[in-house]
Image 1 (tube, rainbow, N blue to C red):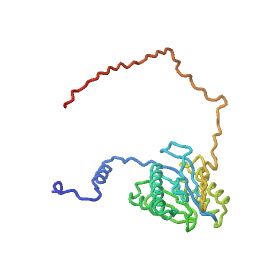
Image 2 (cartoon, helix red, strand yellow; image 1 turned 60 degrees about the vertical axis):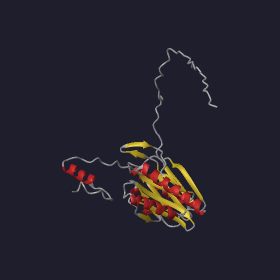
Image 3 (cartoon, one colour; image 1 turned 135 degrees about the vertical axis):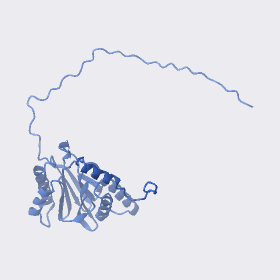
Image 4 (cartoon, rainbow, N blue to C red; image 1 turned 180 degrees about the vertical axis):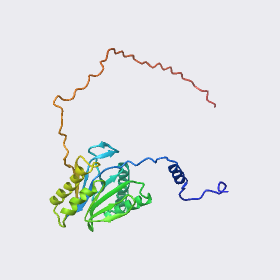
Length: 270
């Protein structure tokens, strides 16, 4: 009877039932690869400061030592991304495009709450399967704003925030040293210290410190603001590589194309 009924709309749970049956029979499901990151943000007296480390991991392997985790959203809005690199890139690029179209349509500066709504709506619709944990910061007509967005679509609005696998170490620094009314230099120093705390206490975080300072009408992206992990060992003898295979024989054969053109004239009917 069930086979003859027409298919209905909605989500099919057939594969879920199959996977449950296979687990009961002893099949182990593949585990997820965890990505490591430390991203932070805080509000200071003139705007918002965002910070991130630069290590990209692929399981236990460091895939990139100097990647960019602070993504451009609008001239006055930037976003730090933690989680799967492809997801954070795709989500931020998509919303950045939508914000640009909105600016063209309205002729006005993008508001941070607009970017927040677009991001949380997209992530909520995928129920956490888009692995993007974000720290969104910017300055608009209503002042500085800082938000965190979790992969399932929930959000927080805080004066300082951390996300990623190194977030606990960074939050320890913020909770002990953050205060309202920080100056620009004090804020940058505190953000750099929080990122360094994640770098040195979390295996998934590492390499360098990137910082972005956003104020009214101005943004400053400090790429590789701090290099806490310089390369300390260099071989005194240098690195020698074997010579390339020598060319023993070279012969050049010219290619001549023989093209025979045959003209045919069809009889035209009068």
